[in-house]
Image 1 (cartoon, one colour):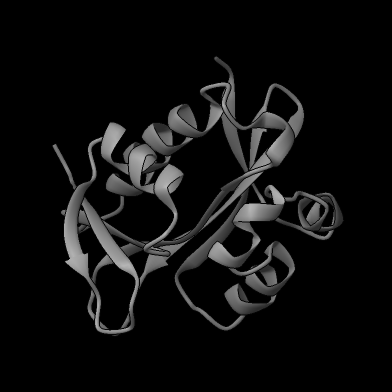
Image 2 (image 1 turned 135 degrees about the vertical axis):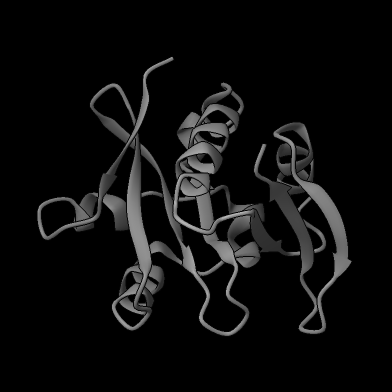
Length: 146
């Protein structure tokens, strides 16, 4: 499976904001447009398109959180047209490996909506371990670098 990542730039940001999750998933995360704006104010974070061959199929935003000194995946989404085909799982495995290569990275955290059963299953299937509910209400999971 040819999954790769490309930084979001002026050349592909509009393609990225055109990606959508299914209607029942829309309340689970911020839009890609919001995330692209937010990453401009988060030093050390990256926004990247997830590509299958030459088609952007998803989006990821990750980086070193200055508040706790840990690497976090703030956003991860696969467009509704490409869900259920294994692309998300493969992309998440590759993303965890890529993020783990950063200096000092021992563990990667992710927070997601408690009702997002698909995300819960995806994170667990790729080696993330449940860490309970965060004070702000999201379910937390972490991936420990091997």
